[in-house]
Length: 102
Image (cartoon, rainbow, N blue to C red; front, side, top):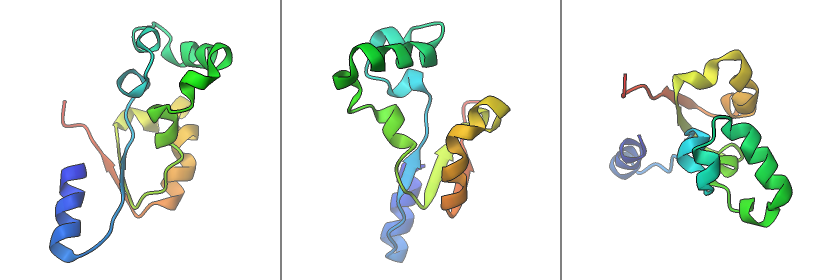
């Protein structure tokens, strides 16, 4: 999706910003969080015991960025995950549900 946004920006002289929301298993810097059975709980634990290592967290930063176009997995629409993306859904112009792996 990032490539497509870049092409649109180049071709039409626009400046759309794209953010790709991916799962914690893709973006977390800690291998033990990525391979945990409960990665979100492990992430919370790691942030409490080693907060300095989580300052540059790509996963957390993705939810705070401002963008015109957001691509995200369809799974983020479930009831338990939707609260994380609600502010983003209200602030963007285009939302792309990326399910190309299915």
